[in-house]
Length: 245
Ligand SMILES: Nc1ncnc2c1ncn2[C@@H]1O[C@H](COP(=O)(O)OP(=O)(O)OP(=O)(O)O)[C@@H](O)[C@H]1O
Ligand SMILES: [Mg+2]
Image (tube, rainbow, N blue to C red):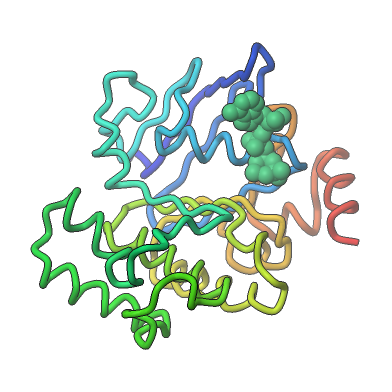
């Protein structure tokens, strides 16, 4: 059986500096995979390659055994319908209400009728405790609310795979918890997720698998208990000692 995401031997350089040097990553449906690693180790680059925001130099990225994201001829709209991504900065459209932010892509890209898009958005907002915010503009939201709206906006496209890139790192520490709670709700709901995070406690808590990136490869990976409690390689131990203190 093929997995939901198959990354094989992916290379990516910027200005001749290799950042990804043969990344292999396999993600089965309903798994939550967490990427950890030092700043600059390529976590964001890998996520951006997975949804086609960056072209790879070599290797393959295949979604669901059928869509080859790494093929230059791939239909990127199709990739982005199937793979949602949320960044550190929420990038909500400031001149649109929360509801319009959420329904825009389903209406324009997936041609969902306006009424249906609105109904589905309201269901999602309620699931994340945001129903009272539907008519508000983004500048009326707290950082935690804005990030949860950004997650809802990505979910509204019904992606098979969700990518989260340090979605809590721009937040006031007091607001981190509510966003992590939203992610926990998604993992327990069975959504397939790949996320980069510096929140090690959270990684340990929600990940089915943790991948430690170093020198452009997956240096060590395994279930969180194994990677955090009994890392096999000295570099993994050093990294964890540094970030866990
Ligand atoms: N568009 C770009 N042009 C040039 N260099 C880039 C570009 N994007 C990333 N890089 C470089 O690639 C390397 C990996 O960056 P990346 O953002 O993927 O790391 P990261 O693991 O996400 O780090 P962080 O934990 O700080 O978010 C860095 O050296 C970065 O400067
Ligand atoms: Mg990053």
